[in-house]
Length: 261
Image 1 (spheres, rainbow, N blue to C red):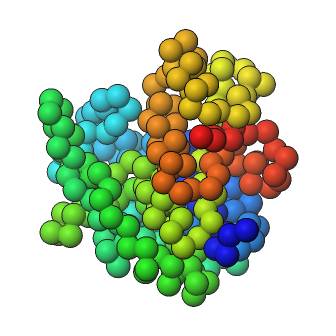
Image 2: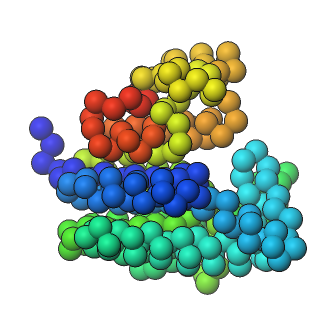
């Protein structure tokens, strides 16, 4: 039996953020989770809408946003500002003592600017280090950290960073001191063999099945980096990972996908 205290890390996808009713229900469910917890949120479509409204043309490559300086200004404003503070305010209304963070706050998540051999991603960060002692102090003080998808390089530069990766890196770092369950919540019931069929949830995925499903093309596009993150986290100390609709937070028996080595 581990002496470590349990910690739930929950990442919510953009589609939940884009739907006010869904977000309100999720935050109510999140507030009912007992014990230590962290929330990580993506950006939804708000940044894209804001960018388009001021004449910027959002660019995506393989599901990743290209972030030049004007786009960085938008994502910082929307992710670390509007979305993060609205989420924190709603959690406070649910009697959850939340505090919002970017990676720059308290030097909590330090990244380096992505260096890709052929693609210039702009101001996109790859996580290098999590300030685990400060994270532990915050959680032990009864604070519920709420992280947006912005980190920094410790040289004054903010960086747009994939929210799934932030959740994964926080989970890996926190697993040194907590027994961590990582939950990826989005609009589907889990990883599906047929995206049009909510009843096609794959309840358990290990690495062998994952390789097979990729080869068959049943798992593709944005789900691949998500699952790669999952297996990386499990190999580095995270106890358990679940992917599914946020209803799974209400009950251990809810339908979802559990990832295991």
